[in-house]
Structures are given as structure tokens and as C-alpha cells.
Length: 262
Image (cartoon, rainbow, N blue to C red):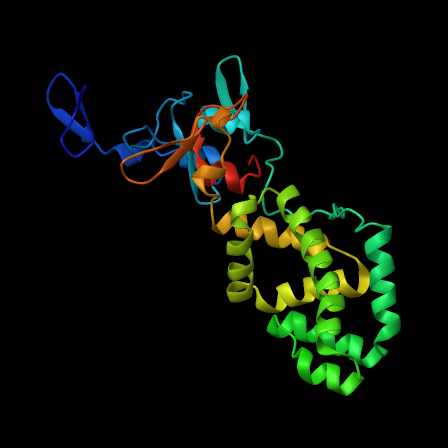
């Protein structure tokens, strides 16, 4: 038996040579293990820790897949896990936000008492939809000095921004990536982002930020500079960044991010 130049196998019999294409050894079924192949790209006839599988569009070794619970290993043999975890599975969100504090809530109450309800909505919607407020015109309409109005509303705006930032960072977005998140969410998840901000302002519910954070991390791996040194980040010549998390073998940063490990 020998390997041919096209990746096939040449099997010798007593009278002739028979060429068998490597694809003939492709594993049956539609599970993860059906995608198993050697590090060289050929279908794997034998499963080892270095065999490569594909899960949700991501390539990883069987060793990594086992660590993540995607496959089972018993007596040295790999098999499909009975229930494979999915990074896209819908789960009830828990609100991870922190209270803005009694002092800030008192300031928000004072601001609400100063501005009629319809104008409160206009202020909030202006902040959400446009990212800015015309304090000059609004101050004239309300009969309030525009500078004083801006100072008071600015307190509320900053308080909501701080609360959102805490949730986003708790969800895994680095401090230096927060502005990038806002730009991404505005461009790619506009209506969902606005709805999340409304839920925060009107109902103090920040769970929407957690879902947006996951979507952002799936689409944008965090900046290498934000990765702890303990994860041993290293970037290959092709730009791929690899990390080694405690208890896991080395894997691509994108894989670790999508699986929620970073």
C-alpha cells in the first residue's frame, strides 16, 4: 500500500495495482465526526486527537472538540456526543446590569420632574436615534437655560452609557472595543440596538446588550492587545491569532470567542 500524488491509496494485490481514492473512506452520517479529516485535509480513516473536524463553520482538532464537550472519548475511541452544545442556542438571558445607584436615580427623578413627560420621550428618542440633542431649541421650548439642561441631561446620558458599558464588558467586550461595538451595532443591528436602548431607558432592562455582545464577538474577535498574557496569544504570519486558555489546547481566537471562552 502506498500514497499516490493525488492523495489516493494504491493497494497492491498479487496480480495488479488498485487505486482507491481517499474520499472512499469518508465517514458516514451527518454528525461532527463525518467531517473528520487528517491535518493534511484527507478524510480520516482513524480518529486521533489531531484529526480535524468542522463545527458551525469552524475547524478544530478532536482534542479541542473533546475539551469543549462536542465529542465523547472512551477507551481511546471518539464518538458523537449525545447532546452537542451550540453557541447559538437560545437561552433565557439574565440581566447582568448593576444598579446605577441611589444618587444617580435621584438625579434622574429630578430631571424627570423638571421635564414634561412628552419631552422626556423626545429627549430619549433623540439620544437613541440621533446620538445628540438640540439643547438650544429644547431649552427655549421648555423655558430652561440650554446649558443647565445639557448638564442635567448629560448626567442621565452618562449614567445609561456607564450601565451599558458594564454589561458589555461583563459579556466579554474589552474596554478598548466599546466604541467599535457601538459602530458595529449601529451599522449592522440598527433596529435591535435602538430597541435595546429603549428597554434600558424605559424599563432598566439591559438583557438586550448581552445578545448584541455575543453577536459582536461572533463577528469580531477582540483586539489582541485586550487578551490576557496568561492566554499566550500568538499571531501567525497569515494573521491568524492562536490562544491557549487554562484547561484547553491551543485554538484560534475566533473559535474561542465564538464558543464564549473569551
